[in-house]
Image (cartoon, rainbow, N blue to C red; front, side):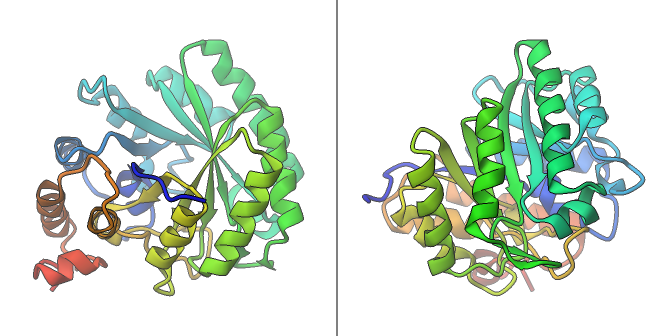
Length: 301
């Protein structure tokens, strides 16, 4: 399959990047970061998550974040929603783009939401129905632990098919496949992506990759070779899942953009502005960034 000429990068630093950070980042700092990303040409972002604030305190300001979003008609500013209560909060905050998250593996589903996968599917169906009642909310799906689960090990392709099929039956046609642990290798990515594309040729699949074992960019290339044109990444390579032991940071947005532009693949993102945003992020967090570009430019010291 020919590699895409244009790729969409969804930056998830404000959600996945900060949800596991040891300190709560002030709302104003998050909004400044969002503005910097928009100015750099990032047009698709996860701006927050409507999870229980007691479980993920870093996301407790999601209502405030979405009520104060800048006017950006060309951008998709998404909220992650894990359950019906989260959907209600998202609607109350005026969210217009929602990612519905669901675990593929039983172990992670129990740790993340205290539900089995079957119970998660039923809850997701109720969430989809609730959000569709609003009439003007864009819905996409995000599947966690598609490749490896910290509790169950390698996830069988048949299990991935079961959960993807459930989302397709709900009418979702844009689904992100997540390597939550960062343990997938390029052959594993190719196997699962190929199987899902063969089974669901009309569905747009994206990849959400972590870099725990340093295979993130290699897995991006594996996805590109399967025609994947949507990738999640987080500025500075920050992030991790609080309910997945061993999950480290995301692939860094600036690393992905640098690689793609070096390959002649367009992203619409200004590399200089993105790098400056990464430098601002490091100053805001007070910790080094896990990104090759930031190290090369001396900002990850």
